Image (spheres, helix red, strand yellow):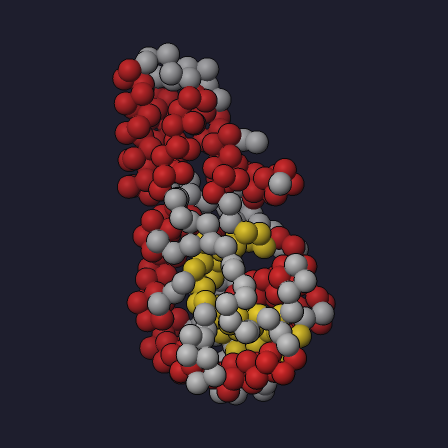
Length: 301
């Protein structure tokens, strides 16, 4: 657990740097509180969340002018913990055979990499996984996911460039049944400039899978580029309205200065965050932990 906290702390270090400097002050004053508010905005916590944090800290400061930085950090963390109640997604397996996870999102968000890393993480738990290369629009997508599959020894079903996406999903599901795989992970295309067609394609994928299992796909997770901060919320709305998302994977959080956007994304969509990308290595896709997130941002541990 300590190792995981260390990974969170390293990944959010750029976001936390300005905050921790202020929280480290022995006592606060009006100027410091103004700096803290600006730092929260700079970290992309957003107007609503920043307002709630600062209202709680101002109330405490009004009662006690000797309020210390570390006291303010505890107050801020408490506010965020309430906002993030329910934010931790936990994948429970066994209800379906196989469990189907469909990853969606725009190009460049990290879907293909996340699909491979998610498969790797589940395989480390002795779960039998099969990947479906359903991004047939980009010729490079097949090559990318095959490279990951070969590197990590992941079972993969793919087809040729331009193949019918729903057909690849169907073949992957059929292969999972015949090979005894417990989880199917589908990597899909993300052509935002033709989003109408993309959404229809994804809806067709769902209809085809539904003929095998009326509840499939059982999970539709949006892969969000965390470095985009609050700008990713509009993308999320489009996918959620069209497909009915069930969860999130937030990628590229290592080194970003906009880690506060996680809060805005969650409070806007109220979708559980299952995994976060904390680095480039296969093992750097980690389950989201509210406690580790808050400690890395507010406690510097």
